[in-house]
Length: 418
Image 1 (cartoon, rainbow, N blue to C red):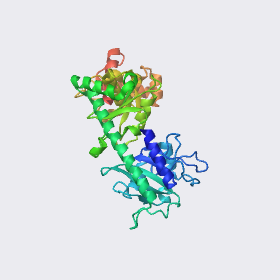
Image 2: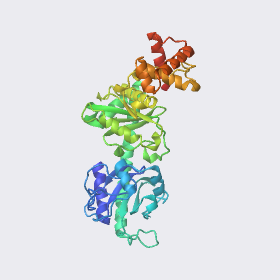
Image 3: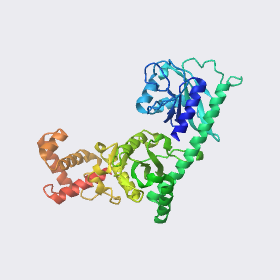
Image 4: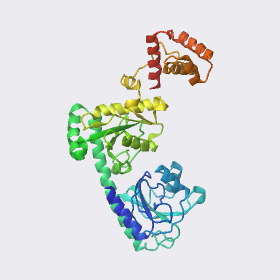
């Protein structure tokens, strides 16, 4: 389907002789029409995002465009717009518009080149935007917003945008159905899991029996979306390599990815990193499960991915995307049921006024009880370390010379992070 988007974007680029870029309504790149701008590699500019692939296109697109403006430069580097840039473009009413919207250059906003935005709609719902760079050569193009009839080229471009809207809507519906099946497989009752597995295998074809990886982003804050959009999750077109995506209530966002090579955690991690830049992922972390073959072990893989995401939130050094294989003791701790209250031996130590003592104890235990290493890690004198540990012992009643007491304290401190 990505090739279909590329072909339609190329049509618009050719009709208007301007570089065109297609983004979804969250300003994530879907396709672009390339052009020769005399030295930046033929990338197309846009309103928010930049390129993230080397696809060529845009036959007939205008050459000789000016250098990149800061908004486009940032978009190329980060694959999406900042919230401030998105808000700036949305202030021109592109989310409500049913026809072309001119957006003038504004150096104070970092926009050095004007744009024409073609809203991509289906049944009244905006699903994305086609952005056209206008360095002035489209200034006389009648868009139909000044009382006169629109230029036939704009009419053709809007017809193509409507075809893009149909594709996006169909993809959203198909993606929503796949997401429902994935959610049933991961968290549904046994009878639903078996039915979901059978249907998902039929939908995914050969990919269902090959290497698969799961990524979790937690927490995931659902955004209010129109029903046509299929729910508060990103479209598959915005997640390269993703086979299905779904929001699991009270748990997080699940993404099923086909890893390449088969045992590589890279693709799932890359998708998770991209999702962490979404507004719905504010304050979230992500985790990936060990790769699997086939659908049968995906419920267990989902628990692994969630455990890794929880560990990444609890222990920043593991994140922002943690692999289940690398989270150490959190593999065991995340399997335990939630504790209503902390272990009584450490309850006092976990009070806010003793945060420094708790950190000292945790670092000391992380260093296998080696005082020199712990003092260096904490940047304190060894005598200061001994004094703090004596206070820890007094607060908890634990003997840090005893292995079982050390184990209890270490696990309790790690669990408190979760």
